[in-house]
Image (cartoon, rainbow, N blue to C red):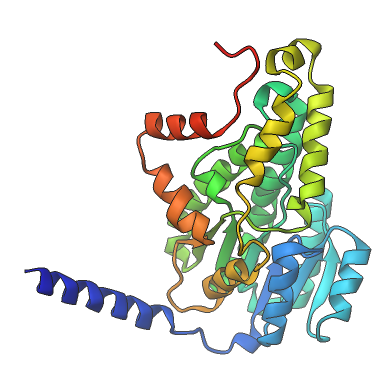
Length: 317
């Protein structure tokens, strides 16, 4: 019996491997629009797809980031300045894309732009701290997607949304996990809705990776700022040693593969170029073997695991 099960399992994975390695034809004629290309995943994906011969339309926040990217790529790649929190900027970028893709439509839309701070205990934060992240990570994704969907439908293309394992399990306070849970929900509903029009939607769920936004200095500085802005009552509740202990516990999340961004961009590329892309991609061993399995456990077990591994406030019960 076990032999039959092993054979069936091996056959399943072989067929899945064979199916997923089939690539879309005429990739050199296809346009892909990527947000957040100044650095990190977006920057690497833009360069990676440019090397593959795709027509990359890269959206950057700054002209400096756009210029640096153009200097590292071929003449096929074109850049535009985009602030996803401003509807007028999204509308202008949409018109810019229309002029370039013409009747062919837009094959790929990659919603990569995002921020991750402030990320701190919720009681340290204000409403505006949550709004700041939600405007970029969730509302920006929705605005860009709805604006460009007519072009994606015309090409029967792909929408690739960058979420996070923190969209499956909230470990930290702040708006980051909240925004990624929202991206997951938006992507699920969009995938089902657009299946009637031949459009495929994929979600990328990276674990911990080191980018300009997750640099140790940046994260620690933002934590310190959130602590400094917390009320005296909250600071007294948590105690003077909590911040240092919290940073030490957070540093435990760092992984040896954190600098290998290709683990994420390879997933994005597959979602854009494979005939049969997955609905979800997990990037990083921590995502595959820690956070995703934990997300399926009963809540009380996850609560206990986090309770045991994170520092307690000075005046905890």
